[in-house]
Image 1 (cartoon, each protein chain N blue to C red):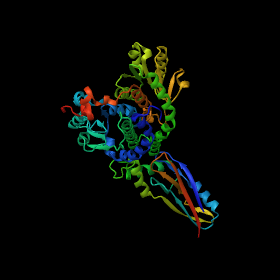
Image 2: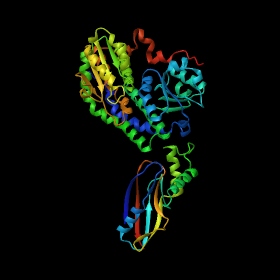
Image 3: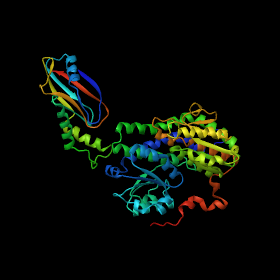
Image 4: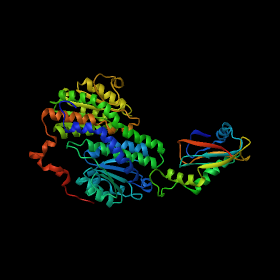
Amino acid sequence: MLANYKLMTKYNDVIDITEQVKEAVAKSGVQEGTCVVYNPHSTAGVTAFSPWDPDGFIDLKEEICRLVPTRIDFKHQHDTPQDAAGHIKSALVGVSLSLIVHEGKLLLGGSHHIYFLEFDGPRKREFFVKVQAD
Amino acid sequence: MGKYENPMSRQVYSLPQLIRDQYEDLEPKTRTVLSFQEIFNIQRIILTGCGDSYAAGMATKHAFEMLTGIPVEVVPAIELSRFYCEKHLGVDCQNPLVIAVSNSGGVARVSEAVQRARLHGCLVLGVTGNLESPLARHSHKVLKLDIPAFESAPGTRSYMVCVMALLLLAIRFGEVRGKYTMDYAMDMRYDVKNQGDLLEKLLPEMDAVCEKTAEEWKEFPCYDFVGSGFDYATAWFGQAKILEATGKFAMHINAEEWFHLNFFARQADEIGTVVVGNTTSPGFSRTKELVHYARELGRPMVVITDGGAEDFGEETTYIRVPSPKYPVCMPLTHFAPVCLLAGYISVLIGEKYGRGCEGPWAFAEGGAGVKNSEIIVR
């Protein structure tokens, strides 16, 4: 089963998509299997992260920007510096997440939520959730 | 096209397709002509040129400022080459950026201006159709125009392409400097391209009004073109086309200065008055007042606008021009009626464009009057 969800992001946004992924798993009816969350954009990423301290998101954004600052000396100059940096961030963070489905539910650690990371924005975005039985 | 069809009107009718084609040519070029580093380095911009190219600078100055936040001056080539303060050239590492426009690239004063700007440390971007030209040779970077050949007439197609090139540069600068998102920039670019379709729909009605106006105005001794903001560029361009196509006197003035000067002119009923007034202009209220008093004076008048009588509250002749999603795109098409009008008056009075470069005008053959001039670079 494949589900598609639309998002409207803000600049360098972090969006919790855990509930949408859980919903897709529930609708699939799969009891034991795998779930893949996929972001088809080249300037966005998907990751699992702790939701408990809001300052953690600030750390996440700042550390990613510290690793890949928006500079003006990128070789990729077709779009914008923000876009060029976004491509690198996306490649480093990854565009998909593989998760386990167990007893009809998403197997997530207590400190794990699933996040869509916007490295540009504001933009219209989407992501896919594929659920497969063993 | 109607009974007075001529090379200028044929150029106007070619504009919709030209807009669509030139967008495809210029969109990628304006992305790559300057690097991120060069775009981020810009602290001031000077737009320079002569004639229609100077008007193209005036038509896009506000777009540059609105989209990039960078201060922009439109400086006539002779002011830049002979008078502009040297202390203000080459400051803060290659500033200001000088964007010099000339499709032929052979205009002496523009060549002189870019040589001086370069000598004193400015970054020079030439916008030209000729890579072998003096303008191209003296520029650090060149945005190459490729305007398909067409039968000769006072600049109509070339003006639109110069305006589009500058507008796409402005959009690009704002995009790279993070003034708006890439999606927003693309939406503006699509609006640039869409002006071809909008103009195509309005051309028949626009043409009919221009034809009738030309018939009524053909014997007038002079014409008055008024506008403010980027509408002034269209007004300026209109007076240039009247001079080139008909050889008659024409004036250009902004909507405020008109109340200080041009309204004093006698024989008001023989002054063909063309008001350019888009409804989104910050100067629109003054333009409305102008239309009212020009009517009271008995001025024969047409108003070039994206609006109509409902916006101006006056009964007069309106020439409807496209209403883009982004007002900065207006200069791409709002000049079309002035070309139709000038071309039709030229036909009706049997006047050759540029006096045919015959008799005392022979010295200007092949543009010699603007190409052959002593170059002084200091």
